[in-house]
Amino acid sequence: MNMDAPEKPKVDSTLSKGLSILESLAASQEAKGVTELSKELGLTKSNTFRLLQTLTTLGYVQHLPDKTYSATLKTWRVGRASVENLNLRDMAAPELSVLSRETGETVYLAVREGLSVVYIDKLDSQKPIRSWNAIGGTAPLHCVGTGKAILAAAHDTLRDQIGGALTRHTDRTLTDLTALEADLARTRARGFAFDTGEFRERILSFGAAITLPGGEPVGALGISLPDINLPEGGEERFGALVADAARSVSEKLAGS
Image (cartoon, rainbow, N blue to C red; front, side):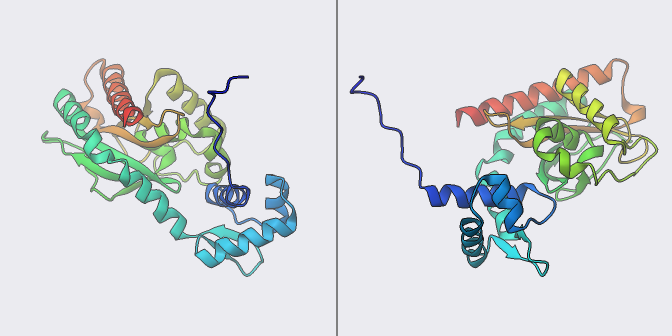
């Protein structure tokens, strides 16, 4: 027996179970009942009900009129604060500058909010013809480069949610789940997502996910441009640039 082996930290059973309920509700697009949660998590109904009451009292869960439960905006705010505490803007600023200099196009830093991305930083293109989105602007996950990159990285978590939210925005939007999943598989294989004008007509975008060491995406870097600005060989070049930039930021997160 190795007497020097460190003891495993003790895990509080009640806290662990409560967090598992909260994680389940936060990841679901639909509210859930006590029976469904207890079966999903392997808990007794009485234990599940008691933990839900505590989470409701603390403001992390709401009890709906149909007797189901869902996560509240307080849960969302805690998650957003965690992302902000990673100092993503500061960490990604050098990579945004490189992408801007190398492409001359508009570049973005985005994070996920529900089934959309929110642009939290950007550098504008100085070209006469350019794409534009404001900081704080949003776009659906399934039809822009940054969103598709995040979807590809979090496919297992988001698959069930995204299937019913494939709204059409242009004639290129992928509104069929099978077609979208094939596109996400290509994204994972090549290391970047490519939006062929799926959110706005003739506006292309490239995106790559910024991930934690376990692979969980916390954001994405993107390049956006009018299709007439894309040079010959630009798809491969811009894709490689944004993939390298996102990898660089991910490495910083791993070392922080």
